[in-house]
Length: 95
Ligand SMILES: [Zn+2]
Image (cartoon, rainbow, N blue to C red; front, top):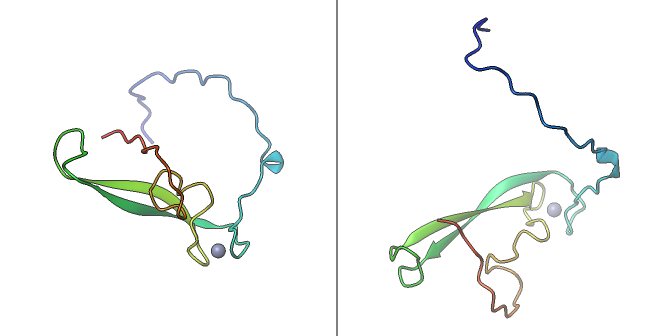
């Protein structure tokens, strides 16, 4: 460890104390597993609808069940992969 800090440490802002015991543990809706791994859905944005006129590959990070691979509920919303719903809303993606 260097004894010459480059910058002065800023005082941390007041943090909200959260008791995780009060927070809901998200479990896989298929197998009740509660350990998730990060996965990416890859969306190819065609040049026609791309803001810069060029085809773009857009990774959408989701959490999938480490046991059965089921994507956690709510993470597919707006990805175009949700179950046969007709949505008129397009996901807003910052490129
Ligand atoms: Zn599962």
